[in-house]
Length: 92
Image (tube, rainbow, N blue to C red; front, side):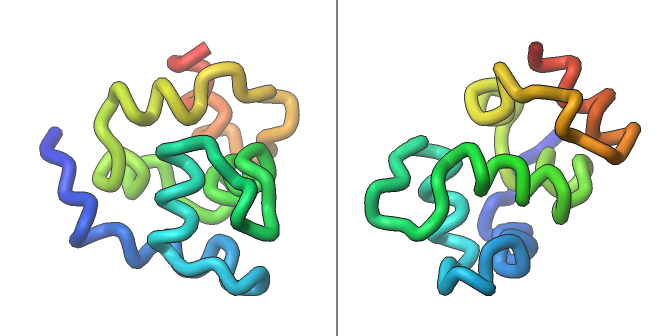
């Protein structure tokens, strides 16, 4: 599957807009895991992304290695959507 981050990045806009974070901010936190300059922690952003963004869209934004890096060690018990839970279990 081909990753086209620029084309799909706008989907991240809705995740943390209530906290004055745009799509690039969300992307930056997820990729770097550094959240010191942002109002939300990496862990919170990660779970908000899983709640608000479809797995197929995430596959278009991030490579498989990036997805593994971001979502490994995710507590699947916190994920309500069965499809998302199954998707995340492939990384744990």
